[in-house]
Length: 481
Image (cartoon, rainbow, N blue to C red; front, side):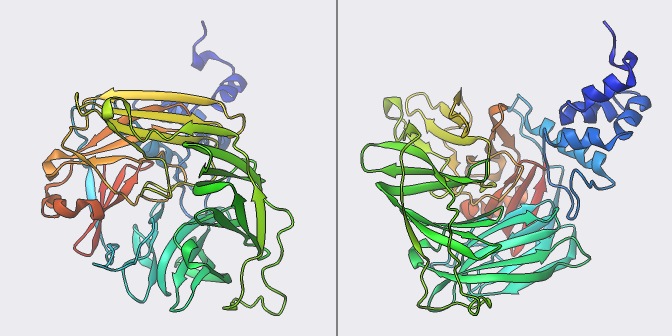
């Protein structure tokens, strides 16, 4: 049998063009192979570009796999090594933090007794976007690697916030819903994050929304989506068109996703007929009317204006049981409800839908996690179940806000003990067949004074770079594992 180094150059290139990122990175690692193999990987940019798509991670602003940064290979190596640390099969030993950085940022905590409900922070590499707790309302964009690159945007009290990266990773689009004193206003703006400073590019448009729909927001591709109890608002950003879609026979809308074909929406919901959770596909309307006339399209809004309404009939295409209670009376929580629990908010476009059910047996103390992966193209399913003695029975599920990560696996269950020495357990799931496993992290002793309120201080965990975000003493602490 011929070894890889003896194969013709054309064949070696063809093999590498279809290899996973970890294979390419290890082949280019001088501590594992020869310099000739490293030179081979670096000889053709297509090798790393194609491998990136098997394990995508955030690239620096203004760069893409097609226009990669000069340190593309070191960044890929870092992503692979973090993943190797996080997927270690043995979790009896907690992962020790490698380093911690601190950044002066106002609190994200809700006001005591107030109604302010801050949404998920957005993380794109070193860029972080969030709305701190301030009565007047502020959105902060900050580069954690260069604190001079920071922009504070004065607005009203923020109810919902969602971001996406567009234009070859150079533009940050922020959609937010804020209360301006009389009405709830949806605003959409673009910001340049690839230049020497973070700056505002363009205010796209404003539109009022009903106060019952002011807390759940997504922006994806050229669309902005606002979720209601049994309806949703869809707006096309580029031409300021849209509808208020009202669904017949629905009792509660749980989740909205953009279908991978980008021509339709996936709805997860409850109805009046049974106790099941259903999925339906709804085409994105092609006839969405303009929201404003030519003379109105000036970035302002009319307080008496309302979104045009379209009634939509839906039919279930896939259903699954709620799993409210498991066998033997063990409590079971459906953790994959992005609008019902404070889980990580990923990109709304996905080739796989994920449902997680977590339970702990009262009798045995064992935890049980069931992952149901659903393909929205053919609605085939794959189920994975793990049972283990960890996390211990005295650990509690954190009410985690999470972070908006485009390439990260979900970390929808985080469990913590009563003391910092107990550490933190995070459930890692992989949508593309990587399975389900617990990650055990050691927490710094500096967190001990804050453990009583740790549920509100943990922002989330970034799987792609192995970073835990914790906020206390007006500082964001980024703990690298």
